[in-house]
Image 1 (cartoon, rainbow, N blue to C red):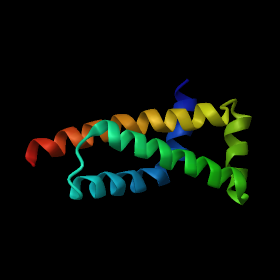
Image 2: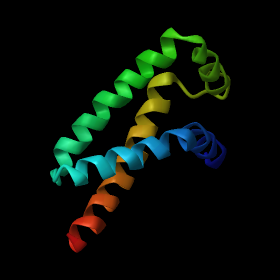
Image 3: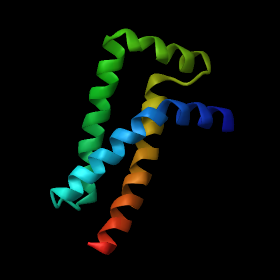
Length: 97
């Protein structure tokens, strides 16, 4: 189980930078509604899945399929991890704003 979690985090590592940038943009715009932010991130993640599945980056998903992680499980795990990070980030920043 921990190896699967580590492999999901390995896939999430380049995405976390964009996630933090999106969080900062929402906070600069004054949007602190967590539900709105999470819905937008779900839309962005769906776009990312479409982009990966339609380009040569699809080959990165083969590694995870060989580990027994379906595409849905991979992206759902990424969304849950991102949602937790977003909630913590917005919660901590909104204290200081």
